[in-house]
Image (cartoon, rainbow, N blue to C red; front, side, top):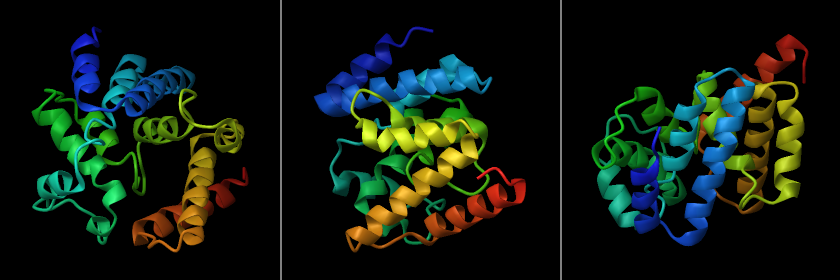
Length: 193
């Protein structure tokens, strides 16, 4: 697959650090896809474009998503998450990506959702552990949890997010807490925490 047009678009619409992060996420997503027997080319493309809307203004992003009927309760309260649903729209309309699995993984790469597919999980995780811009001390616990499986790694990601939000006195989306609890129950029932 030729990724040139996507990379050119991203270079023109992202800052340098975000572009590096996108390349890192694409590389990591490809590795995870190979490890978990998923489509590695599709994972690379999704990792590449997952943050395609990240450098637009909060006002532009909010305007693009405020009419959507698929936003989560409270999602408009945190501008840091606007880029995910806006990115799904942008990937489809501007970049011409029609693959629903890529669109869905782009849409859910920040908040996640209950019962994510394995493809959605690897994009979510790759975004957190790519090696180009994410520090080793942040990546290590997630990478270690990956040895037990995708759900264990997700649980660590959600735990880190909740701790960070509490430490900064920021609101926590109900969905984040619900997903954390469901993952905890799922892992506890398997006995592989």
